[in-house]
Image 1: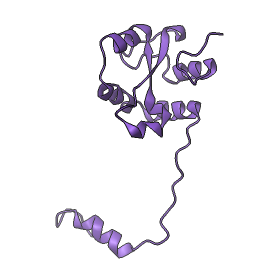
Image 2: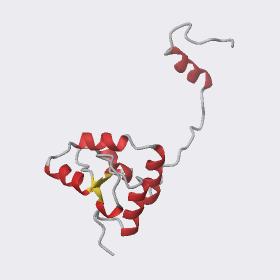
Image 3: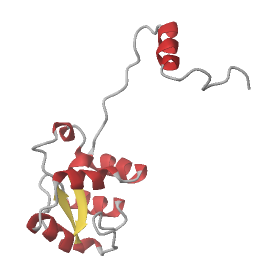
Image 4: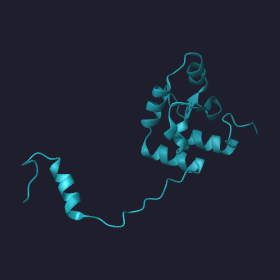
Amino acid sequence: MHEAEYSGLTPEQETMLKLAVEGTCELCSEYFALPFLEVHRISRRMYREMARDPSTRILIVCSLCHHHIHRLPLRVKDQRAIVSRRSFFVRRDIRKILGYLPKPYSAPDTVDIPRVYEEYFSRLPLGSYRLSG
């Protein structure tokens, strides 16, 4: 077995990530055999929120695109745009492979229904909703 291309991943995780994107390069959208895909680490120097969700820190790209990302620098902003276009299912699978568990939701202790109603409907122009069917 070869050593993982992206530090912190096992070769099995790397293969599963490549399968999660169905063998497609996320940059050029071409299909490749798994050995020709690589895991690219997106720089976090500008984006602190990326520290929470590891699926936002990686791209699965072909060897040629990976070379281009480093030689003809693709802005971090553009790399993040590619990550944001992932489908829900790909995102879910990548998070599962990387072992990410989102922070559990905890409902507020008390809910002021009239205040919530007022906040919601105060933003809508008058007459933009119907009271009857």
